[in-house]
Length: 116
Image 1 (cartoon, rainbow, N blue to C red):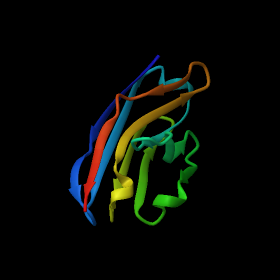
Image 2 (tube, helix red, strand yellow):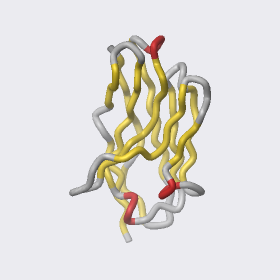
Image 3 (cartoon, rainbow, N blue to C red):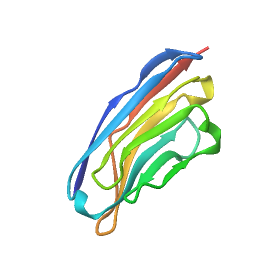
Image 4 (tube, rainbow, N blue to C red):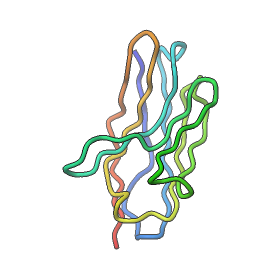
């Protein structure tokens, strides 16, 4: 089992910045990677950015140039710096840890609301 503790999020004006952090504990020895997903009202959950256990980074096209992910995919610690936020970024953001042995684990989610 893997437990994920998220922090950050909140309300920000358009053009502003927020930082999300997530730390995994438990069976992190089998991590494939860790990252952030988001789900806006009425939409499917989508990958925002992630880091694999060997350091490869993937970032969604919709946030490239505005969001930066950093951390350690093997140790299970990741931060997401979100700049130039706009209304389309409003969503619940979920930390995800993918493991070889146990599959996917999810954080409880943190709300990000961008006011225009």
